[in-house]
Image (cartoon, rainbow, N blue to C red; front, side, top):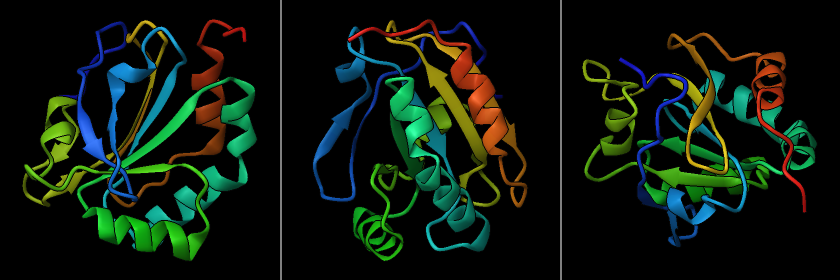
Length: 157
């Protein structure tokens, strides 16, 4: 079962597409995070979803929200995916232990071996303020992201 709104988001450290380690706790007290779990790089629905995020990146920057996309793919696969599609946001590899972060957030699908489509909007205090979760094969709508981001308190520079 996915984590509930209001709960403290579990901290984690994962490599990004460049092999740099990113910790969720590094953003606490600094800025909110949109944590976007997606099943697999290069699959059609995931590609379309992440391309839509890229096209709407200003929505996240306008809210001063860090966009972190997570899949069970390796960092090398994510680097290739980001390069091929021109993504200007961070992709994180929940590769090993396989799906450990997805499992902590309650969105790992054991029978499939990857996460369902789940987004958690986490405030600067580390609390989950909104979530958008769909079934595999069902894309999240950009309007849902807007509504989720609007649930955050304004962050000032």
